[in-house]
Amino acid sequence: MSSRPELILKRISESSSPVSGSTLAKELGVSRQIIVKDIAALKARGSDIISTTKGYILRRAPMPKRVFKVVHGDDEIRKELETIVNAGGIVENVFVWHKIYGKIEAELNIATIEDVNEYIFSLKNGRSGPLKNVTSGYHYHSVRAKSEAVLDGVGDALSGIGILVTDED
Image (tube, rainbow, N blue to C red):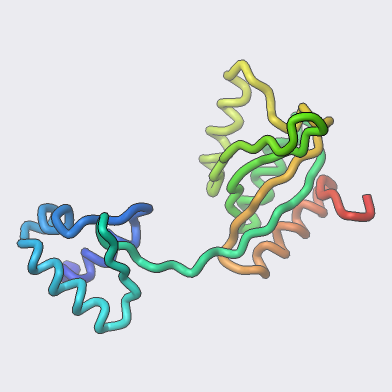
């Protein structure tokens, strides 16, 4: 059984938004004052917890991010996304530079093979086509990863399947 401070730290670390002291107190069946004391103890032990007006968050080091320019046909979308995810990348978005409309961007947040499957399903069963089709297949992905080395591996993997566009292309 985890201790209450460990449960608090786990809850805060798994949340993408601040978690209020009141919420934590209710979930753990204690008073808000107990939560405040537990947060202070966690901070004293080195947890980088930030108190905001909306609740507690855990400071995370920003993940490195890189933009990759790629080109391919519709039949290679799954292969492209699986390559990025399998190399350890998270596909944050897709965007194109249109000569008339400028930058057109869509958020993706694809981090797992399941996410890839859901995206492909949506493309096949929707009425809209991939954004890349407005620029003859050329498009960009902002990719996040836990390290620059992983991003290097993503670039190598995309190059290996022949879809990475370099400055020389």
